[in-house]
Length: 507
Image (tube, rainbow, N blue to C red; front, side):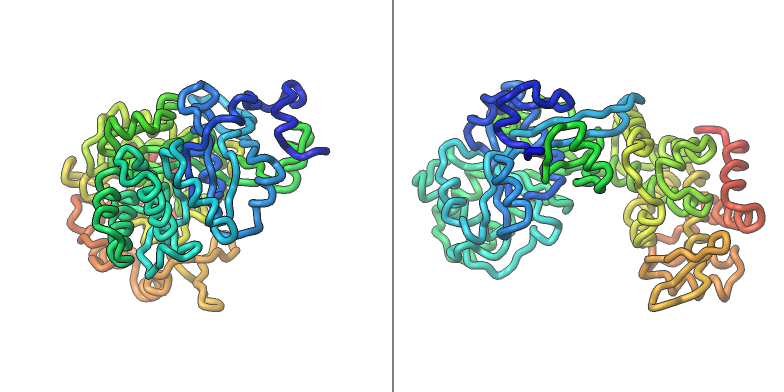
């Protein structure tokens, strides 16, 4: 069986199970320079640009810069930059299965061995956009010489590209670039811009260049959200290969949901015209709304549900959503407790629509998201994702959010360690041990050994070093958490959830 290549694209009908690009897409100019080859980039920005190209909107391809030789760079060369994205999930309550060959990537260059070619791209009049996903550590200031071939860091490489471009176009301000980092760092664009300016000063670059760097280029904060597991397991890959009729070493799985929120003005929107091709791309002056929705409703629901679902015997998010009791609890937690507690002004219709999309994602039959994996760093996640929501809810409604209180009680129960082995604490469920992978596991193990449940709740909620708040001050919260914890100890976790749903009246 042959590999995916231009020959397959240029011979329509050879693979009816996949949507192929038009031949004309392979000849579009290179408008984007992308740092990173990871699956998130292929599954979201690169997919969205390809979708726009199919509609005749953006009409530009991507040159990808890879930090090192080897790895998937050979697959990109063999497959002419083409890759298959297999989209699976639930959207608006309907199951979606779609296979698309993306032609958005024109070529992949190695920064290590092809840096001169990367710098030639910087001199192209077609270039308009820079995208990056170099992991969270990529947006950091390190000592770097932009005249190296190549510089060490991602900001150093980007500054070198901008410096060469400034020289090539003699400071023409119309040749500045729109730079969109997608690293999962708050204010990623603003931080990257500050690092570029600091590096420019440290490298003693011309004042005229620094002026151009600030005035002609735009670094946009952005937020990306899409689950992109990447290559499937061997069995699933073989089945897909049989269906598609070709091999693809870059074959990538993704969920249906997609969001790329970019902070920008009308100038940015004009350059990033691919926004018009998909509702998942949103460009507006303030994207904090999307960060708050994701953090408080998606991530917050995960954190307040994971202990409860795991201790109720559910291994995956999907299996819990398929259960009438647990699925109803998770929905009510998100919509009735967390939505009204978001500490940011968000239109109710927008929040409810977001909740509907998240619940579709939780029900995705193609993704096995394990509750035990979500409990990793449980305490830190609880503080970051949920405390502000709990405090704001209390300020607004002067009462305790009952689903959230039950989820918090389950967190405390999950943290009840019974044994430590090889520096890891373990809890016990139905006679089997589970790991408590949390830096505060020892703290909770000590409390459970010394204190009765009611006193333990009081001590933990009062610990401002954990929460930056005294959670005992929230009206009715300590009482609710204590009651649910005691009930779970006496009657079982799942039974407590079921009883709670029977007694609770939705807000």
